[in-house]
Amino acid sequence: SAPPAPPPALVEIMSLIEEEWTDGSAEADGYVALGACAAANLADVGCASLVADSGLLEVCAHLVAEAEDPAVLLYACSAVQNALADPGVAADVRVAAALRAVRLGARLARVAEMATAAGRGEADP
Image (cartoon, rainbow, N blue to C red; front, top):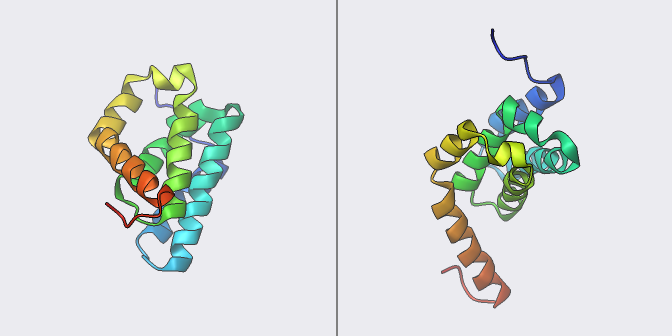
C-alpha cells in the first residue's frame, strides 16, 4: 500500500520553500530560511521521522547543496543535523541515498570552510 500522506503543515512548508526558492530575491531567501527553520525545529522536537518521510528532509538537503544565503544554509544544515540525530532517520537507507544524491558530505565540508573563514574575519575561501 502507498505510504500515508504527509501532514498538511509539512506540505505547506515544502510548498513555501519550493515556490520561493526559484525567485532568487532577498525576500524570497527569507521565506526559504523560515521554511528551513520550521523543518529544523520540527526535527528537533521529536518529529524527525515525519520530516524525513514527508520529503522535507530531502528538500533541506537540496538547500544545503545549493543555497548561498547564510540564513538558508544555517537553517537547512540545522534541519539535516536535527533529523539525523534521530536514530531511526539516521539508519534509513532512503535518507542515506537522498543525502548521497545531493553530495551533502562535500557541501558540508565547504560550509565548514566558509564558517571558519567568517569566524576569522577572512574573505570567503
